[in-house]
Amino acid sequence: MASPVIPPPAPAGERLDPEAVRGDFPVLHQEVNGRPLVYLDNAATSQTPVQVLDAISNYYRRDNANVHRGLHELSRRSTDAYEGARARVARWLGTDDAAEIIWTRGATEAINLVAHSWGLAHLEEGDEILLTEVEHHSNLVPWQMVARRTGARLRYLELDEHGQLELEPLAEILSGGRVKIAAVSHVSNALGTINPVAEIVGQVHSAGGVVLVDGAQGAAHAPVNVAELGADFYVCSGHKMCGPTGIGVLWGRRELLEEMPPYQGGGEMIDEVERDHSTWADLPHKFEAGTPNIAGAVAMAAALEYLEALGPERILAHEQHLVSRTLDALREIPGVRLFGPPDPAHRAGVVSFTMKGAHPHDIATILDSEGVAIRAGHHCAQLVMKRYGVSATARASFYLYNTDQEVDRLVAGLASVQEIFG
Ligand code: 7TS
Image (tube, rainbow, N blue to C red; front, side):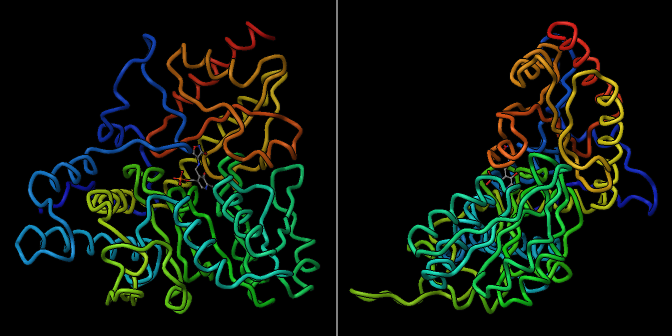
């Protein structure tokens, strides 16, 4: 399969030029409600460059076949592409063991896999699962389900007034010796906070626990190296990092994955099947029952190649520049309340806010009428909303193709909101 055309690596030190990459994203070039689209809902899902669209199209046009079974050319090609994509993800996350990469439908399925496979096998009454107030529901509800089944207790790290996790109580919580697993997000989808995961990992490990990092908002917006992070599990979703929906990844340390039972049963995940029992395939196939999302995996690898050429450090720096510009402008608007760390250096590309007198849904509707797409609601993070005493916020979330002019369109739209409600 011809590999998609990837932009040449950017010279070191040079800032990311969003105008230069916008040409790769067909969806951005349209009018919405008579105005050029400004897409600021990237934390929900990112847009897809032609290089990734081509990877999907080329796969179906030329190579489509099921993996790991046919002794024919197309099956060999699709298997090579699928396994090559796995190796690509492994490199992106900083491991050279591709068998530690499990394909899933997304971050949610990856967390459910760990919660149910590792959790049901290791947790019992009296054990503790450490979560945080800032988690997306995908990193809360599976643990609540497993806690209910095992009798384990849920503990929480809390948020301070600036949207950062309070680490002071951690030592106390861990001193009980009962925390078996901690599940923490790398970056908050509701506030944008970059959480101190390496420090949490260090402390939880010292107390004998393992750590899952929810990287749904991390891997897309900041460089990730699971070895440096020291975590035991890391999850992410393709559709938040220029890839398609329906594909994501669980990375786990080999020793842990090897002793975990399968999450789902079916084709591909077995070694031998008898009438009343079966034995399991080796990693990673033990966790990949049924025909996988082959085109999704191939496309996710193309997305990573695209992001790598641009440079994850430069993507984060660009987002922080846009966040800084947005925070500066919003601070000037009377009645705006900002959530999350005041210093852009502590956040990725998310700005959550409310405006006095205007419901976040009204803000989003007025912005939409001007062609500006943001999200309003609880962002699947109701504990964050409860912590700050609101039911919803408006959220602008940026990515590599957003520009200063788009920030200015957002700010101008908010001036209209203020005129109507202020
Ligand atoms: N964890 C975090 C931190 C997330 O932001 C999301 C999705 C998920 C897990 C779940 O990812 P999925 O791909 O499995 O759905 N976050 C959002 C959001 O902020 N708006 O829509 C989805």
